[in-house]
Image 1 (spheres, rainbow, N blue to C red):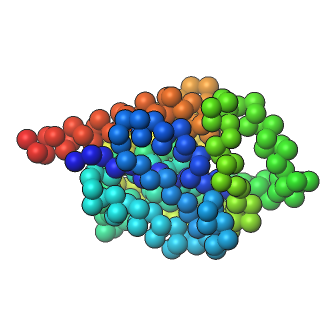
Image 2: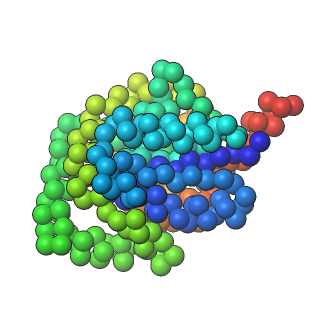
Image 3: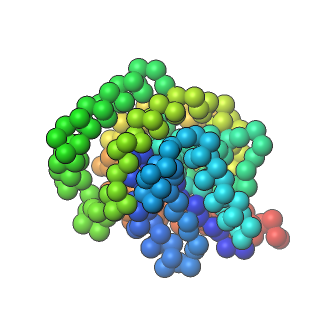
Length: 245
């Protein structure tokens, strides 16, 4: 059976952020579904709720699981949601998991500061897009530069989504994840703060730090991230072959 990949985007962006990964997987003949969470991308007019986000991930995972072992891949907020989802007490049909740029606990002063910063940028002229564009121009290669914003930016959803993350019990969820798990962080990612704790709590986890890379590891170093996708897929294929043997 062919590994099926489900990709969950981060806050404000959409399924388009995964264009380089979807193309890479397509070239390899690996099915991939990059979904849009409520309030983002093609679902911009919908209200974001945790229940709606988890239902979206669950529908995609269960549909994919009918065709083969599922590799779930989440970035930033999508990674945090996917940790909580994969670590449910009733285990979902996830065979492997990549959690990118999401090794921080979204609570307390850290979350409050992040929300304040996001609201401050949003209050700038043009909702701060001139600043975001300048950062993206300087950090992302031309091949992925436009991918993060191609599906639009979920400005009105951002604070609601950030606030909702505070109820997630990620530490308990991590201890229930019993599938191969890769934490992938950029060297300069602000969400690296709890990476060693996260890796220690998950029974079958590896921590990979990509040098000279920011929070946007999927777009800043797409070839490296795609190689790590290949590693995860090879691992799941080996497990399937071993089970069949």
